[in-house]
Length: 242
Ligand code: OAD
Image (cartoon, rainbow, N blue to C red; front, side, top):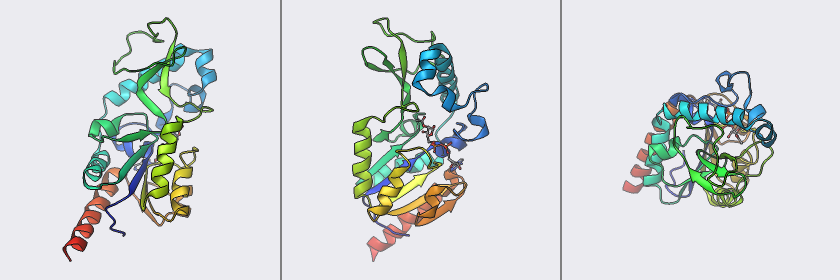
């Protein structure tokens, strides 16, 4: 295990929130009614039936509002406190990193807790659960949409470029609970690996990232990540002491 308390990046996916009770996308529980996320998280699904898409987001907001951050989220808060150059990049839209106390989070895929006017592009934060009216409308009268990235849409360019910068200069990348199949997020661990960083993966099963990761730690993130961090910090302390 390397012990550099410097230039650490963490990339998280749905698996980090699994033990909080948030269903992952590619697991069975990711289905709502009979729809797969790929059927609803698209611009064309929204054009066809905005109320249906908003009902799904309303359900997800209600579900996440009942969940609490877990030990893995809390470990990342600790890491942010201890590591000077630390960047947390998430594909999750659940907001659990922020609720745990993480301050700087690059949200690649947006947030369930923001909505955006389809005409004015104005973004508002909204935590009402349940939503008082579906589909929500902007004061200008236009439809609001969830401020998330849907299939076929580009990621917010400033967030993606900040993520690229962080990953290019990091010395250690932790990848936690992602299937590593949705691009461009899935390219970030490859980028870190090619730039010479050590890549450590945490997952309950092997993924395409496992093939080139320097270390694969199999197990639930809420157990494995706090354990790894405790060992990391004690190794770093004993190095400083000598
Ligand atoms: P996925 O549902 O694709 O993958 C979740 C990963 O978490 C899998 O590899 C699981 O093995 C792993 N996992 C499950 N439980 C775990 C646990 N307790 N501890 C650690 N790992 C666990 O979710 P993402 O990789 O986040 O995009 O999906 C990426 C993107 O695809 C999402 O952001 C979303 C989705 O479609 C958009 O909505 C644009």
